[in-house]
Image: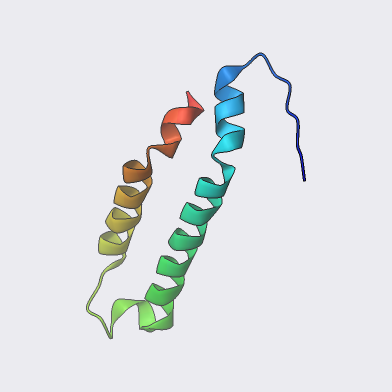
Length: 70
C-alpha cells in the first residue's frame, strides 16, 4: 500500500508519521488502567489511583509525543 500525503504543515506531517506510536501508547495506557481495575482497584497489589496516574503520566512524557501538539 502506498499513501501520499501533501501538506505544507511540517508539524501535521510529523504527527501523521507518529500515529503508530500514539496508538501503541494508548494501548499501554488502557492496559494499565484495566489491570488496576481488574485487581479490585489496586487492593490486591496495594497500588493507589495516584500511583497509576503518575505511572501513566511518566509514560506519556517519556514518549515525547505531546511535543508534536504545539
